[in-house]
Length: 65
Image 1: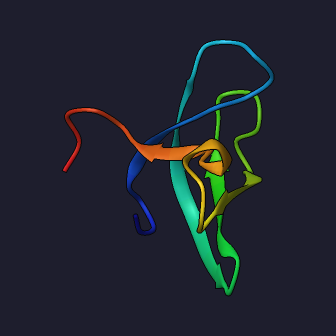
Image 2 (image 1 turned 45 degrees about the vertical axis):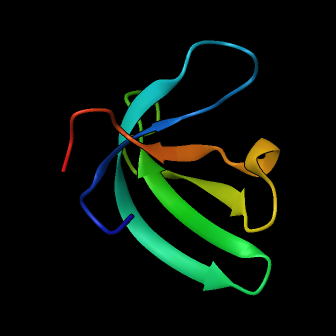
């Protein structure tokens, strides 16, 4: 995923929320995404762990290319 991609994010047990990627930072353990959400238009950071699907919080929005 890259800047300006439309995504969904997993949050505290609720439904996935839609947002837009504002920034991407890669690390050895995974990738940090700064995502603009309705409640956080300036963005909030989410971390996708590189080695486990359970640690994936940001995914491409279905139907976006």
